[in-house]
Image (cartoon, rainbow, N blue to C red):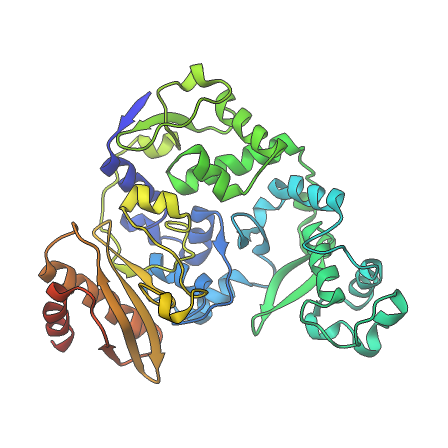
Amino acid sequence: MTDLTADEARRIILRAQGFLGAGSRTGGVPAMLRRVGAVQLDTISVLARSHELIAYARLGAVGRTAVERAYWHDPARTFEYWCHAACILPLEDWPLYGFRRRAYRDRRYRWHEVPPIVDKLLDQVRADGPLMTGDIGGARVDLRASGTTEAAGWWDWSDSKIAIEFLLDIGEVVCTRRIGWRRVYDLAERVIPEELFADDLPDAVGVTGLTRLAGRALGVATRADLVDFTRVKGKHAELLDDALLSGAAGLVPVHVAGWPSPRARRGESVVAAANAWADPAALESEPRGRHRTTLLSPFDSLIWERARAERIFGLNHRLEAYVPKDKRIHGYFAMPVLAGGRIIGRVDPAREGTTLVARQVGFEPGNGGPAKVAAAMRDALWEAASWVGCTDVRVERVTSPALEAPLRAELAR
């Protein structure tokens, strides 16, 4: 079994996630998506939407139009589905999620009972071709004739919204394109290449493949990290355990100094000293190269799980967008700042015309002196400003007194 220091594990993770080494930029956005396995979607847009920020954090100032085109290309290269959350996923991974589509089909509900208009909506997509949300309802489909009381044309999580999303959950329809942030729905059998659509993997094979993908994307991960990435539970979590303990997932047990030891689980004797799993290819060579200095979306897979972020970086991070303003500590959309492979601080950004406004800047102790941190903060802020078309940077509040003067001096240069 391989023993790793916490620093060694952190560097392996950074390389796996595309933040360390020149090779991480090769291949642009499509290669980045394959590397991380899943890009989380979210409606919050501060400097940009999160799926854009995730590409930017790894690739630098790649054009935002190019990012959108890479995600939602015609013909399709990706599809949207449930992984860690609602995510953009590589199209070639469609077969891995068959177990989840079947589970949704068997359950027959989302957060609400599936309304009776499901079959009518599916017929509409089959007859009319790709549809956006505004195409569903009104004269084209008489929803009231299907037993629903909603007004025709009303969309926002109406019966028709629940129904079309259920059809996406079970794999009858798929979203591989967006127009103006609105999903375009089409029959999966029309969009997904035949060889992928017909590849109906058994549950165990799908979960094993997804566990392998998660392990490679995360670099070094605890079982809890892998479960969080894949969001498996119940019998599917047991299949994940089987894949790890049998070696079918292709990950190897490792011990990371300082990481907590797990509770005893099935097959503990096989990996009694292990507290994590790793991609064996990631252990073959020491991670080297240049670190990215960048702002991170809170939805970035490097830090999206709070316990993992604290274990790797000592970062106690919580998205405060839904916290009352007077109870926020770091800000509405505080973005951790990555530099030198460590989280050196946080910035709560906003945009006013052509000015990037740092409403609040905080300093994470133990990652270098104020002068060094201020220089890295300056680089991160100016690169982000340039990327979103801003020509100025303004800092409103610095919560760390020792950082304020050096940071303002750096930004004034």
